[in-house]
Length: 147
Image (cartoon, rainbow, N blue to C red; front, side, top):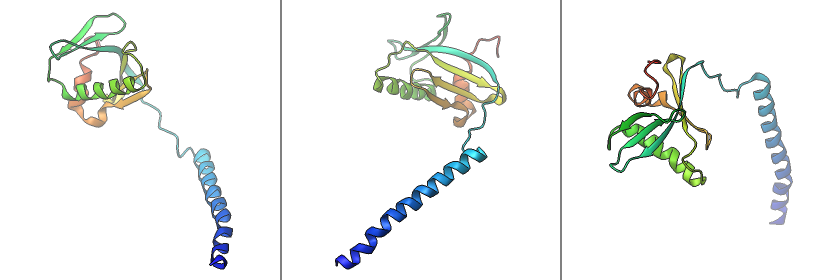
């Protein structure tokens, strides 16, 4: 049995070396050709920093972080996508022991793309991936002069 095991153990270093060489070659090709590079973001149309707070009635109060002004008051059980998205981002903050002080950023890009960013955790949600009705839940947070 030892005669059969010996050739297999000699092949392992060669196989590992070949695998590592292949990975290194792929990494070099990706770097040289910019294959792995992300496309640049389109130009920013508008950006707003917002804080979200639960209300006693189950609603959500949305405030402009810069001015403190109430931007919107979302009734309980309305805007399900907005609620779900904020809950997921808030849960990530809780896991990282980060409080609610840092505002979220909603950015609109040319072409209608929109992104919700949590600067506290570095998470981004590309809102256009969820359709126009879900973008609309965040679009009304921008000042009326923008719309």
